[in-house]
Length: 124
Image 1 (cartoon, rainbow, N blue to C red):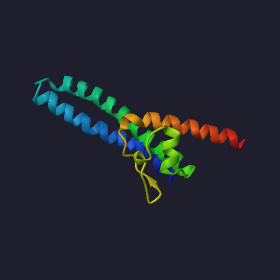
Image 2 (image 1 turned 90 degrees about the vertical axis):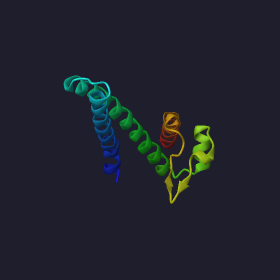
Image 3 (image 1 turned 30 degrees about the vertical axis):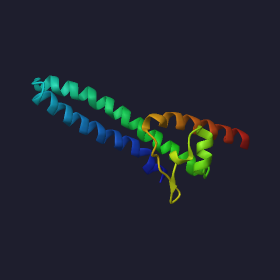
Image 4 (image 1 turned 60 degrees about the vertical axis):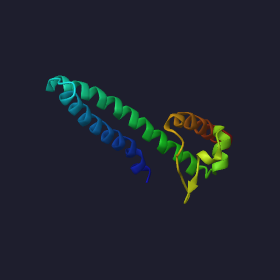
């Protein structure tokens, strides 16, 4: 299962990059009337940006869920660790549902990684 989760961000990034590449090529060609070479260059830049954005979002999602699952944290515990509301972290069928806006994910991930480091150093 860990192997499948580790490739999720890559697959998510590739799909996002592919969709953005195709969309930007069509927009450049039909709306802005750019030539094919310039449209491909612009679309490539957008595809790289969207790959990076999607990869890091996918990675954050996997890491947040891994830490919550590893320490069997409840929604109340995650809320206490992150300083957010418990309703932001619903857990259904032992799976965390990340319903809060993606802009908060880095803050949540940072807080959970600090919690994990504290727990690991306390165990030593």
